[in-house]
Image (cartoon, rainbow, N blue to C red; front, side, top):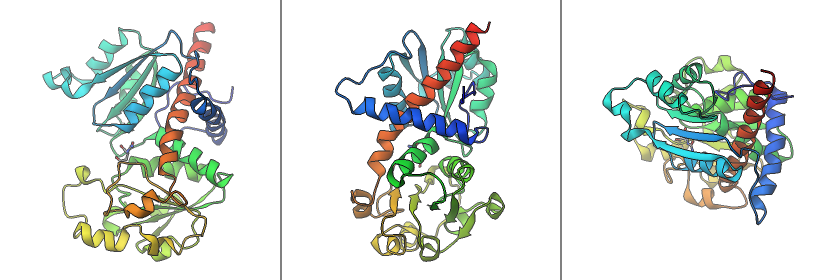
Length: 314
Ligand code: NCD
């Protein structure tokens, strides 16, 4: 078995071989998802509960579809309107759910570390769908699959991650994953949006798009996370777009076959020009969404195999 984890809480504990195993399986699920009958029974009889304590459209839909395509019984809990509002603690919520015997628990939470805490209290496999600024492992895995399919490899690429790095769990998980696979990573953004000490993570840091994007194979744009900002991180959105928004002129210094990525949701005209985002010769943003379903199917399949192995081992 080359994927041993009990939970998928982050990229940090994963070995490159586990990442490759998961991506290889996800490739198979891409084919299934493109077939006319998109169904498998690998999660048949298992219960998947999606708990989103933070608003999400694409990630929740993606996990729901992934579970349904694999035959799981999927339940979505809207945590906005839940007993949390009545004062229940996260641990009590976890214990209540645990008593219902779910097999797979998909959790998004606004606080870093909340999903790890929850995983310690339940008997099922937990998948982190994004916790605060900490990690968003399935996003990094779907980005990796998108890159690997577009570039034919996932190593020795020049990859620029641009924009609001400080508030981004997507950036953090991607830096970990792409670093483990031996790529050259550049972080590009205003100093107010790049965490201090980022140079120590084995990346290069730039505050100028023309320098940061030069000869890049991959340009990954990030959303300006206004909801996580409580002060003056940028002078104005107009100024930000002028200096850091990706447009054709800024992209021109990257390699001619460079791909453009964005995890969504996009702020068009803030971090990215709409024409670039829609350019099917450059942008792989729709592929990222497609890969998302396949990667989540692969992740849940592998975790379910480990659950079964645990049961048969006694
Ligand atoms: C990301 C997230 O929620 O962290 N989006 C996503 O998962 N599709 C990035 C973002 O919100 O900007």
